[in-house]
Length: 568
Image (cartoon, rainbow, N blue to C red):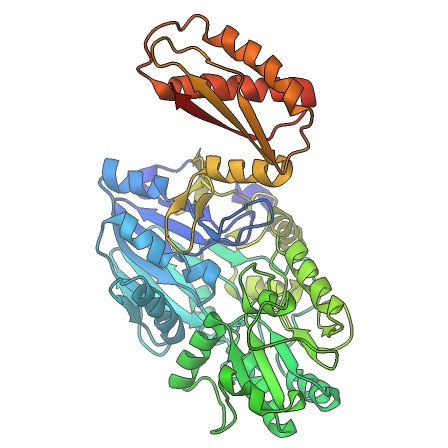
């Protein structure tokens, strides 16, 4: 493309469609995108993020919807609907957390398998199962002034969809996670005819998955993985354990077929994989012969060489079944030297250390590990490589391209790829979470940048975990805790005696001598407060702050300091 002919034109917001990612850029997960037109908001996806090793005690994190709430409350905008692309947690996992915060009634649409998974999540949270099923053969879905066409694409979960979104300003192609697999295991290929039809109508901007853009060629087909599973099952004299994404039904089917050919029984281990298998079987997506599946309590009735176990936890999650098995903490399943553990999944960016640690723990048990760094063809990515993205660009022929669902590194890879396809420097738009883009009929312009933050959540309670809680947990893990117990007279707010200091998990030493020095500093800081105490929180703050400063000054350490005040 000629870059001079694609210079962004001035856009008037009332005559534009605004696009903003509240999650999904930079860190891959917690996908949530907004399309705004006049007073209407269309949401695409509502996912969760996964904590890394620095987010201590955090189960998951969510998109920051502060901006969305402000649009509803202060600008009288309304959500006209939500579209869900597919059933992975980073695209649907946030729905039960986010919906109660929006205080608006609006329809949610998803393909059959995606709708079923999401409604199950809502049911678990005692929320109405309101996600409506849209079959791919159904017509367009009208949502306010938006019209959406569901387009089937191949990915690592059944019924994955891209959306062709028509607006009064222009058409957008929301190309979430995909690859072009011409021989998918379930036989359901990408709907190229719908993609071509969208192209003939014209696409102002292609919002596209970019996670695999560093890989050359095309992403391999699922075809052939069954033979790899069958070969290794024949050679394995112990339990054959596969850990993969729970929603990868095609992978489950391939391994089940291999198990049935080699005379192994199948057991699903872990809440998420049990739930998905149950739903997939009810919907006819999971194919398993009668008598093949056994429950976890029946494993003792079979020799290890007669078993195939599907175990949740391929990303090294702390409380997952795979991690508990590796740590010898699982009641029913123990690893043996004849067993084989196969990792059949990509490592989500940010989980590398956790997966590596899990693999090492399994290896220390004397159990062989395949699929990460050694022989075997046990996994193919569900994300397109460079060849897939070249094909998508050629089919869609968008005026502009905006990469989504990837790290900034992947977005840069995509922009370089687009240049080779003839797109000018300003035709491919790279943005971060919170950056508003205004699209008009003839161009685009950058809007303001909204500050977004990580919203940490305790999965059990569903409550948000404040940033200071995570920070305190980091202090506890790295430098321990120091408790300062001080007796203070309520009559005049002065220290009665030398404070008692208790250290746990801290390298701070010489506390006996330090206690006298600390007493002098606290006495000095309280000396101008000689009056009856009415605000004990303030006294506690003074003592805690003084102790923290003195500990750092003397020991060059920053443990978590907990002042305990005893009134006398």
